[in-house]
Image: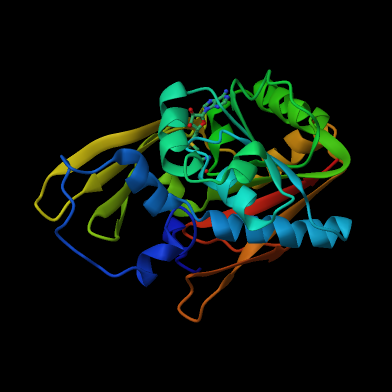
Length: 287
Ligand SMILES: C[S@@+](CC[C@H](N)C(=O)[O-])C[C@H]1O[C@@H](n2cnc3c(N)ncnc32)[C@H](O)[C@@H]1O
């Protein structure tokens, strides 16, 4: 059994190891929780690379139009916009405060031409009405907030209706035996420590309460900076829900391993996984 933690990929940041460490420069009082979140768990360049690869594999072309569901600070949507001059994005989130933060952080620095290609929607992903796109992405397990199968399938149906005929829906999932244990996963990043805690897991309902804490070298802490009340969906359940929502095929992309057993950040289509302690996978759903 390999011991692959979330830290190998996006619930950990590939950028962390490449950044100069300036331990001590952050404190709870001076840090911004959205900035810390992005530095800890988002890697939008890798996500855009993955979308490119999946699109080439399934459609023999690159995607142009992208809709980011649960877009949060729009880090991924704005990375998509910057990647190619013909890229367009629709960023959907229902929290005005996170969107306002993202506007200041990522949107204001776009050129006018880039800004014109971004459509920011303050809306619920279940009811948003947008032009159909090549690709819809839902990342960092955001759809785990749907606890009931019928609600998850209803969301997936909405996604399918939002895709062009030759589009793709790309989402991610996590799991592994560690995910079922009430414990903390701790990683030292750039001047702060990221803590991903399973506060509560109920095996009867599958309900899981996750919290992100940030700790600082001066011993201050941002406790429960983000808290999630999720259902811990399994890959076969997600696959079946996507099929019930009308997706013709669902491809699971599993991460390769480094010699020490940790993830290498390269996700390839797979029919069998490994019983890792912690894993992240991508799903590519084909309408
Ligand atoms: C876990 S964050 C994901 C942020 C980012 N996309 C990422 O990959 O890390 C979940 C986001 O989903 C938003 N959200 C929750 N329910 C939503 C809904 N029904 N419709 C739209 N956005 C929703 C929240 O406001 C929050 O910004």
